[in-house]
Image 1 (cartoon, rainbow, N blue to C red):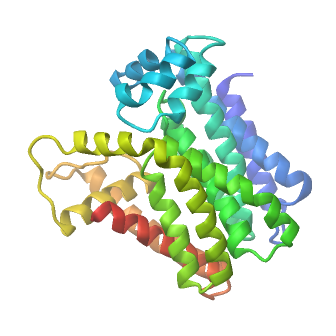
Image 2: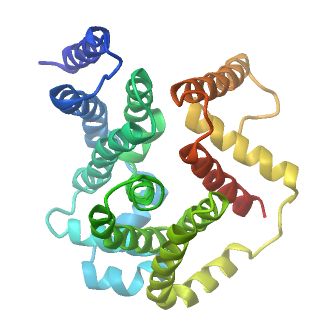
Length: 338
């Protein structure tokens, strides 16, 4: 069966599940499992051939160089050679002990994206209901940005997976009304994900701070106290990285500073947001093309549609989930701006 037939079959199956569901509960039981598998198959049918045929670029070459001499070399040198958090390079060096080829290195990223798709569907079902789960999950699994991260021998897809896992356990522990036994089981997972996130990218800490701020805004005092204790424990384990963080941030400020203002920062965040909604270029030129103009307006209408759909799906009620997500997003944006 060629790729065209695979795509046609998978899309037909997804559409069939959508059209046959008259009750509004798209995903339950067998349909939930089939939907997840079909999205993964579609993602793999695009990424696996490209992972095999595409060449590498500069940053991927640096990753391969850092991880080619085994785990102990990466353990000692990943931070200094890459000038960023080292966990991804430690894991990839172990992965490449099995096979040192380019294709196999990309399989690690693809595997992270596949897991991200599975856990994203689980998370979406917690936050949304009905047809919204179908649209949002499909959009994520087939998004060009996720496909790009699957093909990169860099930490991007691993970081996406960690972010989704963090939100899943965060909502279960702090927002959802679940049994105390379930929360007790989730406690160490949230702690480990927080640690893994900071050891993968220092900016993951912005997400952790956003989670704490959301609980304060929601006046979840007991949950905020427990969350603070968790992050305090995580902070103790991050202490070995503090010198590396300091030196690497100082390295990033060497040279002439560029233009810096709130307007410039907001523009950069908006351009990145456009990339996640409808990818073309991250930094469009001043002489905007017709395609970029269409893209811009499509993105604006998509945002309005997404907000309307989200509000409608939540029964036109601003609940704790919306407030929590909005607070986390605002905290991250504020850190990036200032």
